[in-house]
Structure formats: structure tokens, C-alpha cells
Length: 240
Image 1 (cartoon, rainbow, N blue to C red):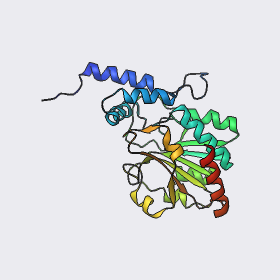
Image 2: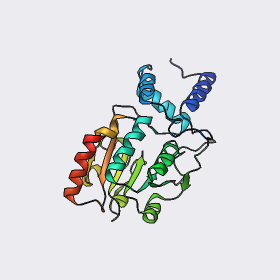
Image 3: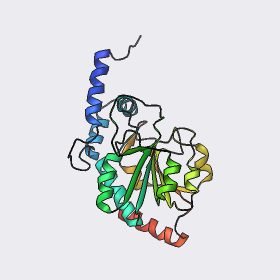
Image 4: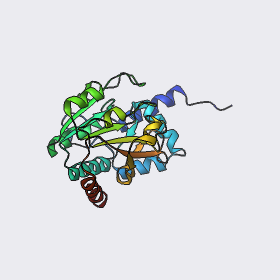
């Protein structure tokens, strides 16, 4: 009969996981707390089961999406090409991604807000980035009126339709699984206009591994005209 890891082994793994996936220290340079893509690939290729290892990493840290530095840089190029001036991060959790986005958005002149309701499945003594506000995403969106909402791993069954149907939103970038999977409401993929972003799916990984990881762009109710949208999409795909 196979047994799980001992208490000592589990404690050691949790310490290593929390050193690997951490919030930035005081005065630390933007993005430095994120691992480069090459390091993530080295780590995931060194374990026998990537998906199981990432799930254990997620359970130890409360982080569901592991962006590399390159992922944030790619996103920022995309936002610049689209002329985004207001960005909302919904479901920010502990703020692992927020801590990277806040300073780079400020440097780019993008008004940025990160919110989380604080009622997710993961609750622990681990610190939360100070930039994450306790708020409902839809209420925060109505106040900020962002052109883009970024949402990593919405809870299973939670639709993004109310956000997408607002008249100010251009795009909702959902980080999760292909066709919904364990993220969001499956019917959103059947009823809402969207496309998978190869560029944003290329870097980073979710808690269930690279094979199921996808970044999907949903179109909002305030999106640009069709002709301008097609032009922006062609430019974005070419340049990021």
C-alpha cells in the first residue's frame, strides 16, 4: 500500500514552495519575485508529473496561476497596443500577479485596480499583497469602468457574462483551462464571443498543468467597432 509524504517531507515542500512563489520584498524591483520562463520550464521538466507538482505548489501557496516574467511583459505590450488606460484584476487572491502588475501599470500610465472578495476556497495565514482590495468585481468594474478585465481562475460555475455585458468593457482576459474546464461557467464558452490567445497562453501555467492551460479573450459590450477590432487584433498578434 502506497503512503503519502511524511509530515517532515510535506513541511519541507511547503517551505520550498513558499520560497519559490512569494510576494516581493520591500523595495524589490518590479517582476523580480516572478520566475523567468526558462526557470519554470526547468522546474516542470524535472518532475515526473507536472500537473501533480503544480497542484501541490498551488495548495501550498494559495496561487492558482503562475505567470513568468515574460507573461507580464507580453500582457503589457498587448495592453499598450490596445491603448488601454484602465485595467481591473478580478479574483486577485493573495496578489501574486497583482504585485507584478501594479508597478508596471503605474509606469505605463495605466490606472490599475485589483480586487478579491476574500471568500475563495483558500484561506490561510499567508500574507496578502497590500494592493489587493476587498471588493466585488462587478461593483469595482462599474466604478473604475476598465477597458480590460483580467481574471485568473474564476470559481467553477461562475459566469463572466455580467462583466462582459457592461457597455464600457472592451475585453475580458480569462486565465484558466481550455473551454472552461475547472474555471468559470462552461456556457460562457458556448454563448459569449471569444478567442484563445496563443501569445498569452504561451507563457505561464495554471495549477492543472500546461496541457489544460489556456488564456481566452472574451469580447465586452463596449468593444471598438468591428473594423478597428480586427485591425487591433492583427497588430497585436504580429507584435506580441
